Length: 393
View (cartoon, rainbow, N blue to C red):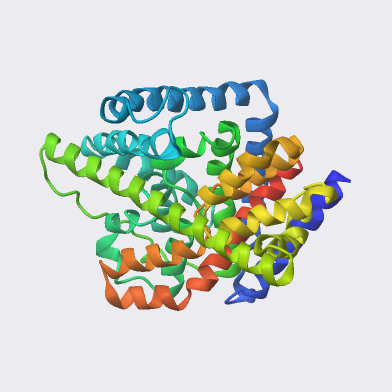
């Protein structure tokens, strides 16, 4: 039964992508099959082998150590604000972003991170059927963030065709930033966060091949990165500390606004229709939950959380999942955790459009035109990753 649902899930996901394909005749099926096989191998390795368990545990423990280090700074400033073990979400899950951002800045400053990103991107370009720029961007977006990544390709952004620009934006929306991975690990199991990071990279390539197929010529397949501005070590530290704090404050503000808005809408719907808005969304998304492998008895509740992520953001949905995880089966929690680890939500359209507008206003207008298609494709990426994990759990 698990295999049958997996096949149905793949078929439905690919069909939904095929429906909005810009050129169905140009779809390359060989790289899609190759990437799918790689995903199945990696997901089995990470979730079902002892070596994979050790690797994932090592990564999770490393983030755990970093989060403990970040606590020393947080406690120094906010030590008396909350009782021990009862620190509010902003202190325990969001402020650690500042320290992670500093580490990313240090790796950037000493050119370690760009070397790693270019290396991984080059290897991926050999199997994903896309260009070097697209491969680099997908890896870079998962590390430096969906907005900041466009700065590194500033010189090439204005020269990109509409299709290549879509791919770059799709990669930014389909993954998550390394700076907030630690925050995710406070809400969902670290092994699912790590697995989602890996799977979404390949799922993004697969969906792009279907939704936005094209061929990059050798003349176009050039990777020219923006030179990092020269600054002293302490200038860099100050910049990334402020950047990390800005991200934390932005996420906090979005949580306050979205949680309050959802509560208000739920109250309005409940008073008029005797059913909450989230419950309605749960019924709408329940078929998608089913094809990922979630048990039929839990698909409405799962669909509720999936829809919450789409209309608000992944943090709100993760908090909802954390609150009801005890009432759901481990299988459902695992699949939902994978689905939630991405930036596929409406607010990301504005973030990406804003990031490109600051660099190239003309290209930003193009991005805005295919904003909904970006969100549609990124949601299919999460659906594909969830489906693949569903057959492994």
